[in-house]
Length: 278
Image (cartoon, rainbow, N blue to C red; front, side, top):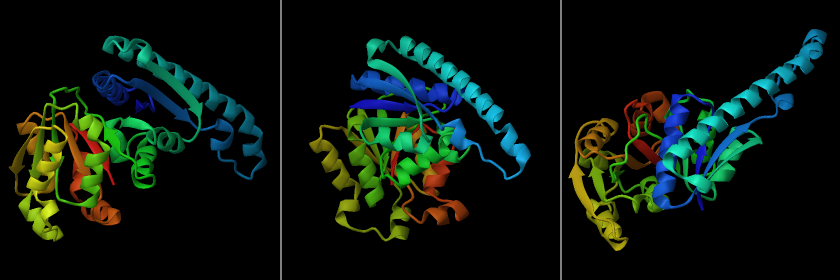
């Protein structure tokens, strides 16, 4: 098993994702793969029907291919620098492939302990935004959005509402949770009432028992008000490096139009790492 870091460029957000992926791989004592996937320029270029566009097609493809080669080289250099600083040695490898980023991400996530994306990918403002969303929504695989600033506090906050999405995120990210010294279970009782989730298994005590069975120490906290704001405040107050949450428990279209907990977390610029599953 491995930690996979999806790399879409050589900018600050991609480097932050790589640094956090290095931290996870080192603590998991597993291999780190940096994956840069770019589409074939010959198929990515859209041709118009005019003779002029067909005539310039060849040079345009060549120019795009040269640009991709430069990007891959920059990403490989960034990967080498980051992994050397993290002391990963021969447990780190950089791979580039000609593929649609979404397809490459879904294939890599299927066999990874953690799949890390740059944080802007969650907000639709990054080359890997589609790859992030399709991996989580279409393949139902767990994903991690890296924090903007590196943090390794040994604490994770679980956003617990008893939903299938939250439970799935916890189970799929269990190897990551086992890295933590303490787990904070955070719940908004008002939100529980709105979602009509009143079963015994939705209570924090039920999750606490499950965590104890896996040898994980915990603390239960409650908060009020907006879910995303409350979770962010609780994570900051308890110095958590990660929030583990279900994603899009309500309609995704509804959250896109009217907002919601998931959208609020994804848009938070100062968010810790976000470990999500749908």
